[in-house]
Image (spheres, rainbow over the protein chains, first blue to last red):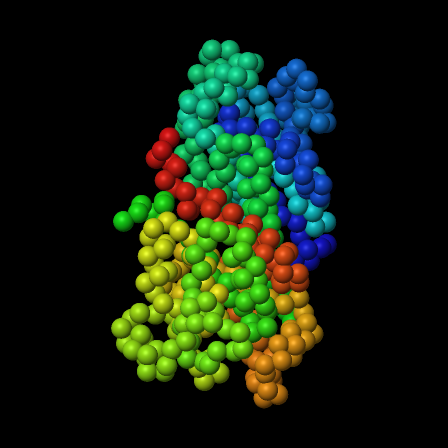
Amino acid sequence: MAATSESGILFVLSGPSGAGKGTVCKALMESLPDMCLSISVTTRPPRPGEQHGVNYFFKTKAQFEAMIANDDLLEWAVVFDHYYGTPREFVETKLREGHDVLLEIDIQGAMQVKQRHPNGVFIFLIPPSATELEARILGRGTESEASFRQRFGAARHELQQMQHYDYVVVNDVVAAACARIQAIITAEHCSVSRNLHLLTEW
Amino acid sequence: MAATSESGILFVLSGPSGAGKGTVCKALMESLPDMCLSISVTTRPPRPGEQHGVNYFFKTKAQFEAMIANDDLLEWAVVFDHYYGTPREFVETKLREGHDVLLEIDIQGAMQVKQRHPNGVFIFLIPPSATELEARILGRGTESEASFRQRFGAARHELQQMQHYDYVVVNDVVAAACARIQAIITAEHCSVSRNLHLLTEW
């Protein structure tokens, strides 16, 4: 097992629906070749263009419930009648091997991960304004009216969860949001609490 | 008075003698046009090339002691028989106005600043190795043998103070150390505890 000093850092990118987590996560991964991205499991049907093993692992409800029973999930939640979860083994193996891991998950999931991995770095991505949030949810074009109302109301409520996170990043421009997150990653690697091994190396 | 959310952040760059604080600070200021650099007061004689009001404010012992008596110093210390201190008003005015302020000070001073400004960001700069530290102190060429031994011994002891800081930055290459510190500055501006005003703006 790797020494604590050599363990990777778990970064959790989360935030309200419509903040642009998926877009920012994709851009971030393109600029971070050493970051390991965790792929979530879900029982919701694929949206147009989504691929199994790339965007999600798509599972049946029975398969998902078996994973819950086996403690194979780091976190899981029911959102809009579908299960979402994070396979545990991939994340914990990569961290032990010293790799950084990025999770892009919803707020319920992030709070569960925080219980198991309190040393993780929790980043809350928010849209620049309520008006912009509304436009983004509508612009996605995949939502019914009822679904939109549910998402928008939930998003405003979810914003209050910011206080449980370490960092808040305003997603005004994707490249700027990515640059801030990259700075957070660099800074966290410099935190004294993650570098106490230096005290014994002198 | 500016709201808390608009206050600047106090960054304290410190570390053992020979870590390269001065060089890194100078390079950092060249790339951070909005950062306000605090200039220290000292009673030690200027080294060749040092200018009053640029590197330090050079004062007599009597002048310095009057500043102590008037509580005009944010921190002060005696190092190698000379007084060093940080004028308080400049720092606190700039912070109130919403500007970030950078202090480049020794460890004794940093720990005093931490008592008055616990929300400051304390960055510990270290040389990449003990061997490199020795070479740097000798290479400065301004030290007597006795002064060298005193500095080198103190530096190894001072390294243990790292645990009282927020970040540790290895000064292997000046540009790389500066990039890490710039990332820390960006990350701190994204910290949730410095952005709680966002909760009420939605």
